[in-house]
Length: 161
Image (cartoon, rainbow, N blue to C red):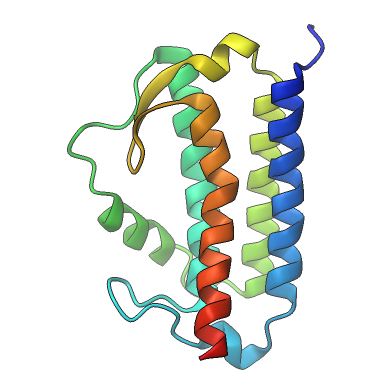
C-alpha cells in the first residue's frame, strides 16, 4: 500500500480534530441546553436534533464520497436536501445525547479509515453533492468538518441569546 499523501493525511487530521472539538462542545451542554430550540425556521431543531443530524450527515456523506470515487456519480439533480435531513435526523429521535455522540464518533472514524485508503487521484474525482453541486471529493470531505463547525457556531449563538 502506498504511504498516505500529505493531502490525505491533512484531511484525516482535520476530520479527527474536528470530531474531538465536537465532542468537547457537546460535552459542555447542560440538560436544558440540549432541548433548547436552536433554529426558528425550517426544522426548528434543538441541539440534540443537530447532533442527530451530524450522525446522519456523516453516514450519508461517506457513502456519497465512496460512491463518487467508485462510480463518478453523486446525488440526483432533484435531490431534496432539506427533506432528506429532516427525515434522517428524525430516525434518531429518542436516542440519548451519549448514544448520538458515540454513533457520530464511530461514523467519523469510519470516514477517516475510508479516506486513508484513497489515492491522490481519488481526491480529484467529482460528483454531485446536494449542497455544493458538482464538487471534487476533497471539497466534500472538507465540508464534512466545516459543516459541523458552522452548526456548532449557530448553537453557541442561539444559547447566548
